Image (cartoon, rainbow, N blue to C red; front, side, top):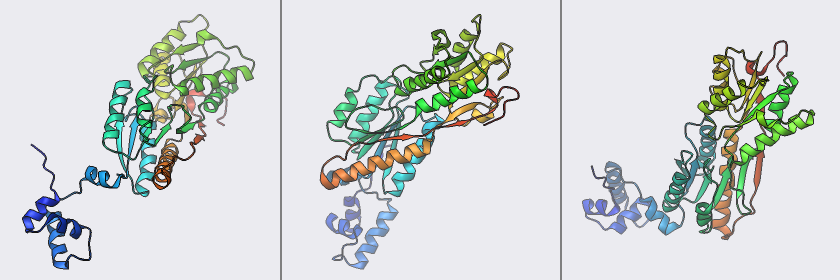
Length: 349
């Protein structure tokens, strides 16, 4: 069925008045009689008239709409980020359009074009794991569109970013395993082109160095997709080693969950034989058996901060036609200790 949007001309035709009279009546103009205003508003409501946002934006150069690109909607962390974005945006009088790249560079390119063509006032972006070139982003930035990057960021001198302290979070997670008496700690490494992967690996290495423990390359296994399946395969590879690890720190919770499956299928116990720690604190982490220790990221706060930065940038620019100085907000993580990493007799901290 074809969709036909009711216009001011349709209302004018129905009432036998001019479109300009309808327009002024809808805006409660003092020159229009109360009777005409009443007739126009009643008919507009009956016909479900909605203003044409695109047409209004062409006249006003502002749509009060923010565009958001995230890698995956099903990702619990990103769903909390969206909640934070909406919390700030709606309070400030902005609507939100959400798209997902589905971890595809091509989808990301399509989404960014669609948001630009929808005349959003600015964009909030977390790049896909395939994104290693940024020409598509640079072309939109060159058109003057305000952008703020969050979590997975494009690092350039002209854009604000909101990130969590992945390095410190990973370091704390690894230190926790060392404190539990673990001496051979493996790391399941994430997508190689993402900054968060590099920061989590660096935190793992720093904790080992601080405790004068060797960094063994054979204990660092790549999980470029960070999925449950990859985590399981990586853990199976580690379990085949003559001197298997006594702990695994995974780049995210799905990889940690896959590792837990492999450990159980091998007839080993968690954490007695192998302790496991994840990253992100997904909603299912506490429901696993045993419950998964994980690094919690403040997703809601990240969304709030990213939206605040973008709205500030939009309103600063609309006032002075200049961009404010870019900012980087770094949010703290928190280690949530559960049974998957607690060796017998070791109390929770």
